Amino acid sequence: MIYHVLPGDAQVPEFKASGIKGEVIVCREALIHGPVEADDLEQFWNERARFIVGEYGEDEIAYHDNVARELARLQDLEAEDDVNLWFEYELFCSVNMWFCLSLLTGTGATVYRVEPLGLDVEHRWNGFGGFTAEQMRASYELRTRLSHGQVELGAELWHAYRKKDHRQLKQLAAKCYADCFPYLTEIAAAAAEEDIHPFEVLKEIRSRGEREFPKIFEEFRKRAGVYGYGDTQVRRLLEKLQ
Image (cartoon, rainbow, N blue to C red; front, side):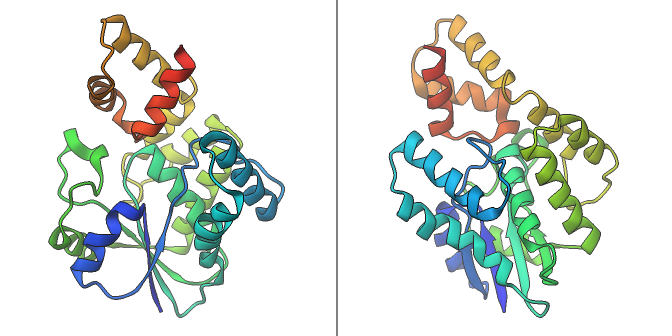
């Protein structure tokens, strides 16, 4: 079987229009926010469900059905299966991808990374947003196969991130020369400042008298696009600054 892990529901329509064959698994998580440390996966999913309910008011059962079970399918893959991870470069997507790689270790499945190719450096954090079906197909045709060691590296990056071991994260990034993890050094540095830098950026923007959210969000994306925060995450940060 061929599987495609898409970074969100927004990419599903264009993916389906591309005609690429395979079964879709949608990653609906945002693991850069909330608890990620747990003794086992069952506890992990339960902690995430409680966080989502408390933060966004959603239903725990809906979380398990639409998010947890969707991603847990990765553990059921077998050696004859191919899985394509459609993840973007910024921290938001990188952390989700690292988690998926941790689920894939031991399955024996053939793993590929599909990147949002064609972006210039200035727009590298924009990801698949705005990609047409043709652009998605072109990115798929130039996908990168991950070796067993690279899958293991992704799992190591996840475990370092979830333990907030920023030193280990930076060490892994420094020794990584794999094409499948572009901008990793920059991403690891951003992770180390995740609890401070985004707030500092927002404080600076507001200190200039800006109060309209669309303009605040646009400026935040320019200055801190490496985090990959959407409008929901930026609004939450602003609420904490009140």
